[in-house]
Length: 190
Image 1: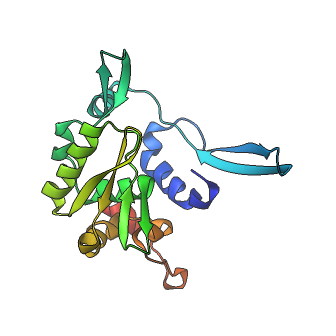
Image 2: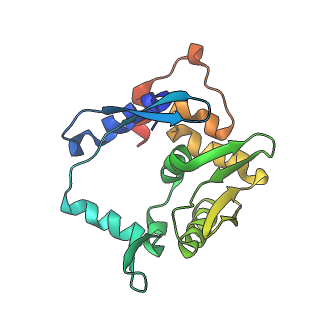
């Protein structure tokens, strides 16, 4: 994530701390635009978890072997529906969501999943949370989910208690720091 999301990354770091054996890492990425003779620096922050057998269960929920292409593809198992709730949607929006102000909708960038997986996820969101959404073709073989305007208030009500304040903008909201934020309160929800 970029440094502008450091407070959320730190929040995740605290949640996953029992499964982390290193500090948060900061990496500068240099990009040079030859035409303009510009040099930009992008700073990213990240951490990684340890590898333990318990995590294989989650890997299997999201990856399957494509035998025709002889590679692993990112998909969504039907089994995800048993654990998909407002907390999961909040983190999905935080990680892969974008609020489009002019259309009053939320896009979920599910481009890296196969089409069938995106359709399964769309159905899970509708069945588990009663949120109207649709799958649209983005480009090439990539599909995204749009949370419809008529479900924006419901979505906000369901996920806001689990959203880190630095990510409220992904719901079209502003966090007013003068009102204060109890960091430990958000931990109690999770």
